[in-house]
Amino acid sequence: MASADIDVLIIGAGHAGLGVAARLKERGRHALVVDAKPRIGDTWRERWSSLRLFTPRFMNTLPGLRFPDGADPFPGKEEVADYQERYASERGLDVRMSTRLTRLRREGQGFAAEIGRDLVRARYAVVATGAHQVPRIPAFASRLDVGVLQLHSRDYGRAGSLPAGPVLVVGARNSGVEIAAELARTHEVTLAIGSRSTHAPARWRSPTWWRIAQLRNSLSHGWEPPGRWPWPIKPPAGRWIEVDLPRAEHEGLLRTAPRAVDAARDAVRFADGRELRPRTVIWATGFRVDDSWIDAPSSDRGVAIGRHRSGPLPGLYVLRVGLLASLYWGGLAVAADIARRR
Image (cartoon, rainbow, N blue to C red; front, side):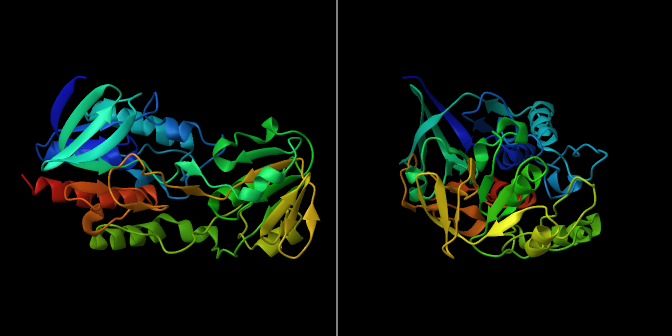
């Protein structure tokens, strides 16, 4: 087993990990960034084809490289992926892809990371693996027949990849609502809603609105977005509507149902007793965190996160949840905290 000693080890080559590495480099600190994906940005490339961010371009800029302009104020997933790849190259960051870390443990005053047959020792470790790790799917999903196609939202690509017939989308957060709206153009869609989300007009997403939010972030050095965010549906006619789901149902965009609570054979049962026999079920039911590779106390939400995104062990930092913009601000706090230490 080969071994190496480094200053800072960053696990995850997304916005958070790259931003921390760049800021540390500006302050004369070296960081090694490792990621299991073959290519920088692949986490975005693997999402569904029509995915767009709901934060404007300027909110996704990393230190030292402006996010490119475009006809749409809200960038698509490929643009984000390409930007991350370009950023790492232009900033000269030390990034190693196709590198899976299997264990991170405390060793002396730092950490030891097992990467394949190699051992890397670092004074500081930053976990920037994101929250979208292991799909969370209800246990009753296993009771559906094999004839019902089941996908998690992570594995959904495009409407044309699904068979004809009714589609049930379970979950009305951002992914569920966007996927349901897209599929409503080609399929009969029912959206199962566990809890009602609050929604706002698209004009609230103007650059001015977001700049006010950005100012708030800069003052707090780490933004945890409040509750559920606005998500506009853009129907085939090209006009924006507010995501008032009863209104969307009334306009014929899709049907809604209460929480999905059980399944048997080819049917899914809802909280009000109704049943639906879908040809396809898309579980937009979120993810759970898997921190089993970290030798530290954790729960189903992962290791605990404290001030400056610090983890449960001294020198361990965690950047995981929130908008890309909030991860950016959290990353600045992490980099500043590490830079102060020697």
